Length: 393
Image (cartoon, rainbow, N blue to C red; front, side, top):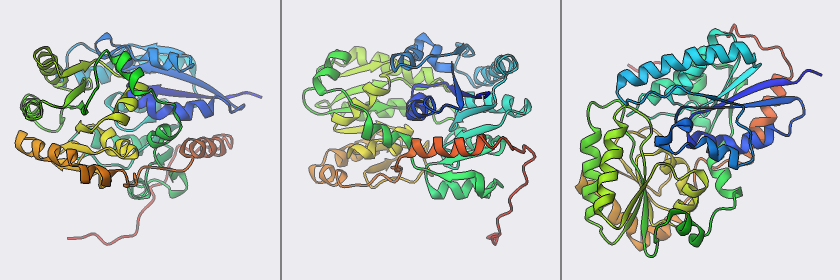
């Protein structure tokens, strides 16, 4: 029997972390041939060559596709998307996958999905329907949903949004998040192991900090990282583990500021990438998580750890009560940090439920994929599903 060839594309450490339990289960399905393609930041020395983490987890990277330009301007991001489409057009023509799996909302995923759509390869989209009103990710995510055939969302609310985009409810499934599944199932590092691997003394309270550019704002990265670092100065008793920003426009402005800050402050250290295992382990023992990463919303609450979410990048996501949102100025950030350090609030966070926790998320995803793709009756001529609702004026 001919196996169904499924190409799984990952461009970042975070994407691979979310895909990991799904890949593990898909590998055991007899009818599937799984191809892992690493691209984007995975192949960049500047961001830690994180494709090696995929291999360290026991997976084979079947193809590495270079597409990352060295600049971080909006022009270079657009050119990177063009290069991605050219490279994946050649690869898909050569490999001829039956399906392509893409995740969430990165511009790399947008380019891959666009290529697959034109080449009539059905797309399976993970984690659509969410809103992040401060980033281009918002538009990208919904665009990928419209190009995709099969959809998996983290929440029922997000499932309804994908249906609102005109997608057939019979092909849209709310399954929870794989991030919280990883937290439940992975054997994380001990604090001592973490200290040794980071080469950083973590005695006392420390914070894990990730700041990304807010890509729908003009030239705000420099001001926002400056305000963040001013806030960190107000709590010199805290140690800070910084991870670099993604390869988005203006990301290097943030990263260069972090590198300089850590040269001048013994209580801070910056890393190209912690890797998924070290990142989750660092969060587990932290006093709080600081910045504007989606992980602070979707994964950190599962540890019972407070999140200080800065600015508008993640605005629109449903969030647990352990997440404190604040304006991107140092006064508001310090106020939020004070709340995160409050013993009563920290105790409260340990009781909070993470809305993104699902039951057997990866198993459900694989079961549904198997059920749909083995039928082999995919009709890419999708009918627009009209939602009957009254438009508010």
